[in-house]
Length: 89
Image (cartoon, rainbow, N blue to C red; front, side):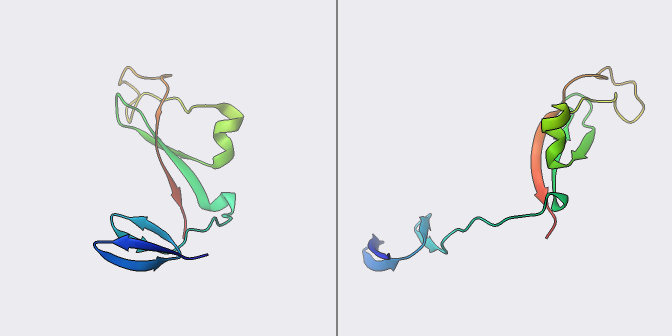
């Protein structure tokens, strides 16, 4: 049900949500196939990146660094840090 909301002295109907004073479209959850989702992890020492599918974290845990491009960064075996999730659209 839409509610009346006052923004900048104006009363408007709100059937979505408000961000920074603007009424946005109502958000909806959508199902995305696992094959279209990947997580990006980065080594904080050498900057190496790895992308893994969603089930990887639950199956093997946090990715570990392979030591950088030349394998000599001194971080081989260190846990990588989560950077972001990407989806293919």
